[in-house]
Image 1 (cartoon, rainbow, N blue to C red):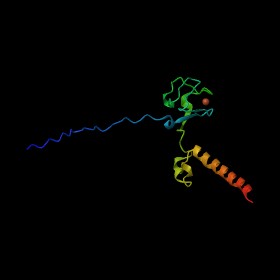
Image 2: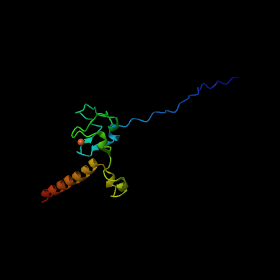
Image 3: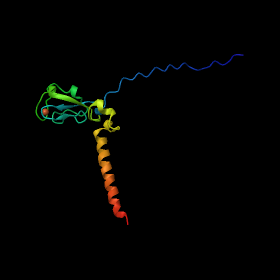
Image 4: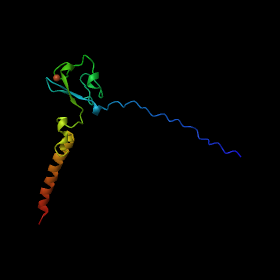
Length: 128
Ligand code: FE
């Protein structure tokens, strides 16, 4: 009696070694022109110099200049990616969790609570 050989092929599953995903435009640092305050945002690119959206500041052509004041790229300072909480990173642990909110989330919190307070106030007219 021969037992049926287990026809179970050895499946060699190679570990999926994917290269690290390229940074999304929201993870790329924005750079601010120190002389004039213009901010280069990789999400938007620079339409004036025909830089398409998605080009990080470090890959701009050498002859690129600030579209507002004409400064060289070395006059720019990184101000971090767009969705980053504002303020110093040492302070993110304080403030009852409010410090880790992005500026957009803070706007929603502030103006949402103002709107809610206004609705509550207006609802007083419904009392008899
Ligand atoms: Fe500038």
